[in-house]
Length: 214
Ligand code: AP5
Ligand code: MG
Image (cartoon, rainbow, N blue to C red):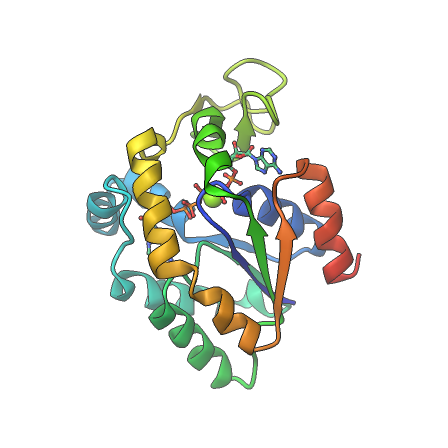
């Protein structure tokens, strides 16, 4: 099962992708998480990515495409994978299609989680992510059991550097300009599914399971 997640920043891609990965036993590959891990470890890739991420801009395609194409060729992706945050531009989608086509494969599901811009800024301000394992919480909609502590690994919960209101607005502009065109790309490929992302997290997941077949 080869799945990609589409949707604006804060739509709930990571929240749902983690649950899908667990339910269907396939790896969750988040390019944002990969970059944040590189930033945390002080790698050259992390330093380059940070320049763009802090401004709410996309990291250049050439830093992303090979990284993802190499990742989905690993053994643990033989039964499928879920891509979260990639592709984000038409050239990225083309690079993915080409890499899959070489192996006679294609994306099976493009899940587009739809949330209007008005809801996003509020969601981002309340998001807290685990510094250690990346688990995602929300102060109001998905609070941790203990304040500021991850339910999964007890790590510290932090606000992401790019979740300041001005940066979120920039990320939304970039989404509409560069990533939203992917919706029609995957519609043409016949694999697009649109999902209402404004309802409760558990209801969104039920909808996704209906699409994927639980
Ligand atoms: P990335 O990390 O991918 O960020 P994003 O796409 O902006 O998306 P987010 O992670 O912010 O949101 P999400 O949809 O995962 O929502 P979440 O589940 O956390 O990318 C960051 C940056 O890295 C980019 O700006 C770019 O610079 C760079 N980058 C990454 N990939 C790239 C690529 N391919 N090319 C170029 N650059 C790239 O949910 C948000 C909050 O809402 C949480 O608090 C959650 O608990 C809550 N929530 C979720 N669902 C619901 C619900 N149904 N109801 C109420 N609350 C909910
Ligand atoms: Mg995410």
